[in-house]
Amino acid sequence: NSSGSVTSSVANISVRTPPPPIPAITSNPSSTVLDVGESAVLSVTASGTGLTYLWKKDGQNIANSNSTSLVINSVTLSDSGDYTVTVSNSSGSVTSSVANISVRTPLETWKMSYFTGSDLSEDEISGNLGDPDSDGLSNLLEFALNQDPTVSNTIWYDDMNMQDVDGSQHLVVSYSKRINDMSISLVLEESLSLNSDDWSPVTSAPQLLSSDATSEVWQHSLSVDSHGSECFFRLRAVE
Image (tube, rainbow, N blue to C red):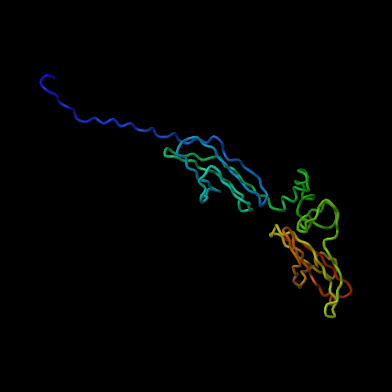
């Protein structure tokens, strides 16, 4: 006024930025069924700002899984399980619904390529010990030999002949085995009779003749001089 002036103390105006909304998931990851060797991709879509991501398998954190998608190249059976992703920001977090990854064994994939849905539910047709083509070879053995279980073929070997080895008669037999399922082994057995309880593995070890990306060729050389007038051999698939 005409007499003078006075200044107040400072009053500060602080404008706070409102906290971001808690994240909201708008699209959950989807369950999937895969064959061994295929790639799995799980994705999530969420709204919000400042988002971070953490994927889990069966409740356990997955290292370096900090993006909107989880990619697993060339899945194995151990990748089967329940997956979730937690989306977080400074205001909170939200967890997706469960996405299940189911990885089929090579045997399951093989069966699905030959049998229909109804056949797959019948053990006599598609079970491991089933023999739908009645050729005496079980489905498990036909799978291991990479054969067609719907077409009768009683020949399980590639070649079989008698050879003289150092003056002794040997039965030399070779067969092809698929290599993409190490859980199944082939055992060559012998017997002096066809009694189902009188079979035992041969004592000679097989030799690997050749291999490629899908199969191996194995050969047995079996001395038959000590087996008497009759001797029987069979190949058995074992899980």
